[in-house]
Length: 101
Image (cartoon, rainbow, N blue to C red):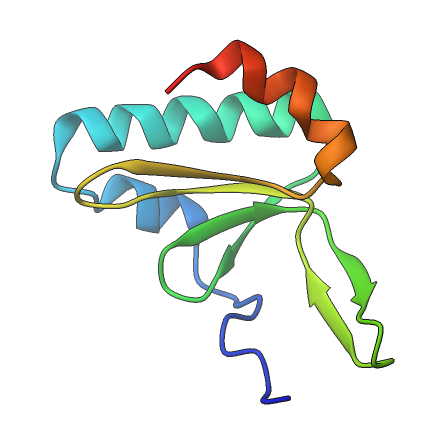
């Protein structure tokens, strides 16, 4: 299995969010950053060039390979906002039913 390309960086989350050109994506990113910090108590960290993640955990594949990732995060991409929630299918299904399309 190849090495994971998206890793935690030292890039400033605040600088990243403030540099977003699209006004709605920028506002969404700033609001989500505030909500995620308040709700999980973790400080945001840039993962790769455009993902804001909160917290860290180590995931172990069935092969034994380990991967460090974040439990929750988001990415205010040009076309849409992506939200990352690392839960099992059983844990996340009640929330997905409430989200709709």
